[in-house]
Image (cartoon, rainbow, N blue to C red; front, top):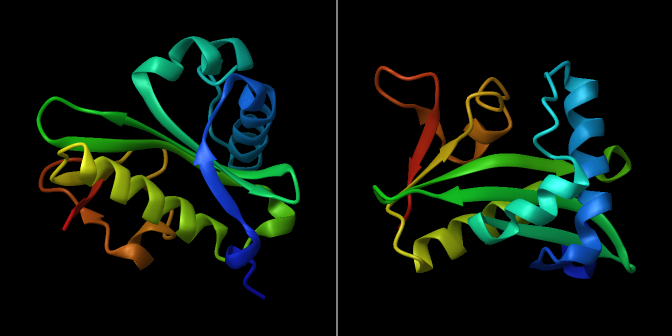
Length: 143
């Protein structure tokens, strides 16, 4: 079942920070990834000006998030992409990736990469991301 027509993707605001932090930390814990505190709600708020963050909202509830950084070399990087477990397989992750790619392209990025801690996920390969030459990253050219 796909819900994307009912999902609104919008810029992350301070009011979303606590939920975003909980979503990222829960996802990393369930995936066995180390959490260095990088996405505590305080750091989410503090780092918002340096990151592009978008939340997926369904019926007034944050159900997903994508956080990316914009690099100087025309490459943006997805640092986190999380969807609440009860909403997996419903198109929300795809909608967040599309939003991130579109916005990064509008800001001049030519390529999108996936953070090394996320690169082991087969999820991103379904959307055209491939291993970058000589690196432990996945990358994709943006149109």
